[in-house]
Length: 100
Image 1 (cartoon, helix red, strand yellow):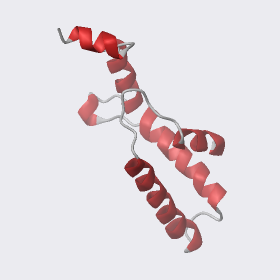
Image 2 (tube, one colour; image 1 turned 30 degrees about the horizontal axis):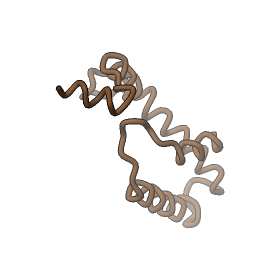
Image 3 (cartoon, helix red, strand yellow; image 1 turned 45 degrees about the vertical axis):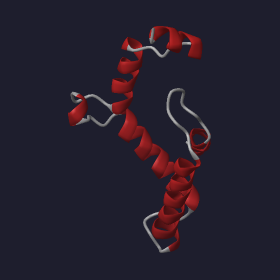
């Protein structure tokens, strides 16, 4: 789970903007999380426990949580369905041709 979490941090998703602001926000959140939930005698004993708990929560949040605004389906299912019915153009040239 920890390795998957680390891979996720460095994954870029096609069609989604990736900025240093997103990375900085994630790093700030991660630091705050560790400070509040590990160093300040929170419920986890060490950072590894926290990383595993976070990966499990993110997995639940994206793959099992039923989202009311999305028709009571998990966000990952909704996104996969969207991409199945609205495929992204393979190239920039294909995108431009569709505008004419």
